[in-house]
Amino acid sequence: MNYKKFVLPLVIMVLVILSDRMTKVWAVETLKGYPSQSYLGDSFRIIYAENEGAFLSLGSDLPENVRFWVLAVIPILALGYFGFTLFFNNEVGPWQRIAFAFIIAGGGSNIIDRILEGKVVDFLNIGIGDFRSGIFNIADMAIMAGLFLILPMAFKSSVPKEKESVPPEAENAEENAEIKEIEEVSERLNKESKTE
Image (cartoon, rainbow, N blue to C red):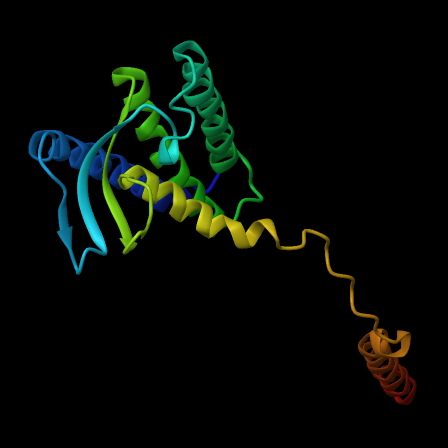
């Protein structure tokens, strides 16, 4: 097994998880209880939020026991599938490995929060005027980056291309030339041996 192909995905996973964990700690220590901060003409906001649901608070209104299964157990199984595919499927290409690394790291970091804290800390928001994203974090950005990388591959045809048809005479031309050359050499050697 070529272990070099796993170096970049592992580095991505470590960097995403570390940056997500550190920025969430920073958000709790410096943003919690304070008003939002606006930058770049209000196109970028930093605002503290605690999210009990999934991305963009989806599922936050579910009962607690259902939320645990839907937002922790099922994602763990999905990340397990991505991890297995990343490390054990030899048909996975380099871009797919990178995409899976982003998804595993982002999803894993958010799952850690859901299991340990029962919520995820979000603090980033982008938009123009009233057209705004939900509040998100570094892990969410990693998941979206992974999905962005893998999306074109989902639409890529997996049907092998048909072999271009080559006329039989062109296909055998090189072989015929070699046979002819061998026959000529053989004939020349026969003539030389007869003259001796």
